[in-house]
Image 1 (tube, rainbow, N blue to C red):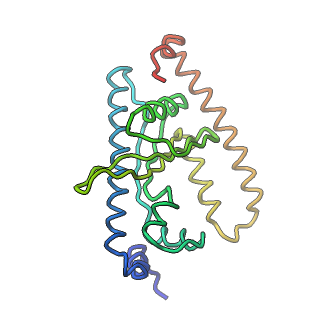
Image 2 (image 1 turned 90 degrees about the vertical axis):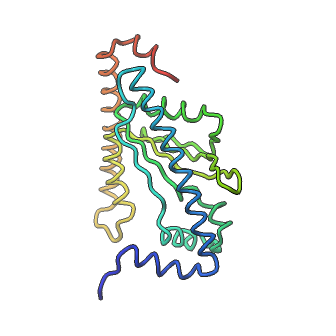
Image 3 (image 1 turned 30 degrees about the horizontal axis):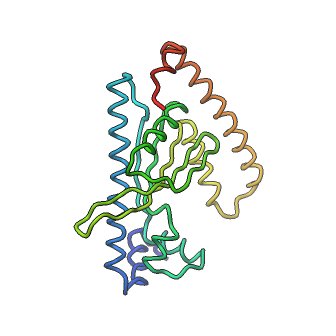
Length: 219
């Protein structure tokens, strides 16, 4: 049997949304705008850091909109009727931004500065294994007026992002032999990476002047 490509799968699943296709596309446009708004805010902070402190707080920034088929599957797994209102209320990861930083301190500095902006509303904050996850609401300005839409933001160090990619593969791999053993090894790797990130942060402080660096880092 010929394997279907993701776009074909999405189009077929969208047929299930016959009565809400136009509102669905409108919703996706709103979340795309919200995602780009967050990305722009972070890029502006990156530019300011480069000017003031002669270095960039993050290496890369990635954005993604959840595929329609993934949205439908998530709603079905939760047993939630597929409506636009339910999607907006129940899903916080339709729009996502991932920020990859070199150092741990930059993760928290960037997150604090973003949350200090008066048009950002924090919905949820989770901090684990030096990977910071935020759910925020950001305004989207359209011809119909201002809308508040949620965006998931993930802050990670370079090392932790590498670890997270393997962890993601493990979580979605079915019938994996020795899954528990691999999960335990990944846990040990996460602890080791966290330790390395701390050491790298200390080295940066030594390179850039110790206490002087701490004083100039914004919080």
